[in-house]
Each structure stands twice: as structure tokens, then as C-alpha cells.
Image 1 (tube, rainbow, N blue to C red):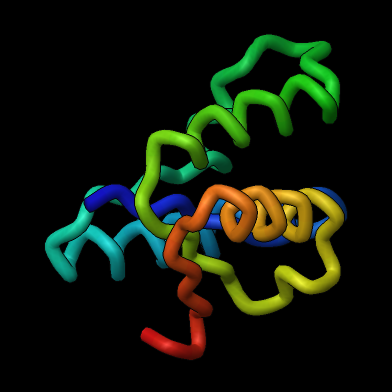
Image 2: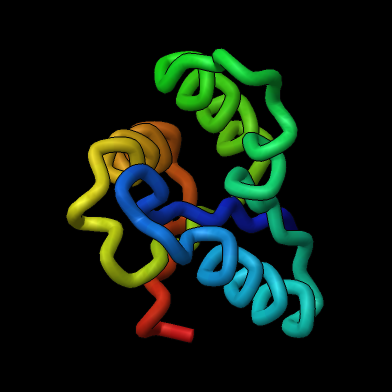
Length: 98
């Protein structure tokens, strides 16, 4: 099972650490973590927000579950990912649940 990690990135200074911690929890539980913060960090300079989000939605499509990090409510991108996940009938988990 693949689990997509979603949470606030823009305007935060510790998103890589939070996403990596979630990735560790997910992999230690025996699942495959899809960490868009890590993947998107390898995109070329000049990549736009819309391009990041387009790739993130493609990554989300590959997954069975979306895992919402605490503070997701403050992120436009995470809200869009959650809406996409619900529309496409993905299982939704919240950080406080695990």
C-alpha cells in the first residue's frame, strides 16, 4: 500500500523534517511512503507552484491513502490534495490517528 504525505510546505521552515518523520512512521509500519516534499525538492529551479501541485496530484493518484500532517488546514495545497483524495475515493488518515 502506498501512502501519500500531505501537509503545509509553503511558508514553513521545518517541512522537510516533518515529512521525513512521517515517512519514517509509514515505512516502519510496513507501507510505502510517497514524500512529495522530498520528490519536489529535486525539481529544477524556476518550477512554479502550479507545476509542483500538478506533480503532487500525479503522485497522489499513485497512492491508496493520503496522510494529513498536523497543520494541513493552513495549507491551500494540502486542502486541494485532500479534496482530490476524497473525490477519488482515497482513504484519508490524519497524523493524530497514527
